[in-house]
Length: 273
Ligand SMILES: C[S@@+](CC[C@H](N)C(=O)[O-])C[C@H]1O[C@@H](n2cnc3c(N)ncnc32)[C@H](O)[C@@H]1O
Image (cartoon, rainbow, N blue to C red):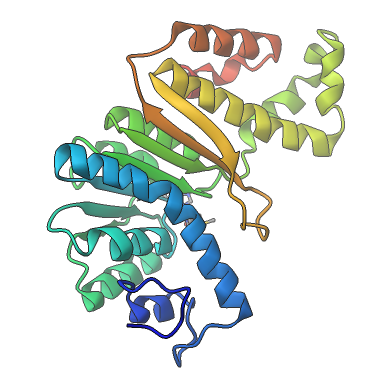
């Protein structure tokens, strides 16, 4: 039992200290209280998805892309999977020192069904260190196009759920900039992105729109919401996708039309497949 009311009874205090949510002497302060609130906020979206998969299959595999320090994977394991006999969390991360640190922490805490792989998201799609089917994919602020690779991974693994909080994406803005003169005469709506700051923001926005349409075209029902409590980050768009059908041709047609109108057809392979 813990004396701090915000902390769930099943939660490992040792883990919270390692994640700097609790201070070394086990206390919570204003800063760490906010951090804990943020983590729970995200947990409340993902826990029902894990529950649904676990109830349906008796097992649940989750891969977290661009895992960083893997705090999301650790919290999900600690609050949900720890008490169960099945289920696995994989963290995929390119920085080897973060991978080794997470491996050591999981071993120390006895979190046996956690695995950390020093791979790019792209490499993980074909890696034999991951199972052929993965139920839930998360990618939280995975840099630039790593979110797109995470979507590719999710589609290849036939995921039931995909949870994305995209980071900045520079690729679309780059093409908009490059083809500015050509695209500008097409429509007066080009004013939306004429100024450089707007080009960057609009590039990110249209990227997420194309990602959502890609997911819909592949049979996912998509919800876009805000990751509230994440005030420290400019990027707090939360995309949750649930596999519901074989696909939606109208979403693909919309993608084609947008790429054409925006002169973005050079990026067709990224968004349409
Ligand atoms: C902004 S951090 C986010 C970390 C964590 N998801 C979080 O929200 O705290 C992005 C992480 O993604 C990793 N990363 C960037 N590109 C990647 C790629 N292509 N494949 C795997 N990891 C990548 C970086 O090393 C970094 O640790």
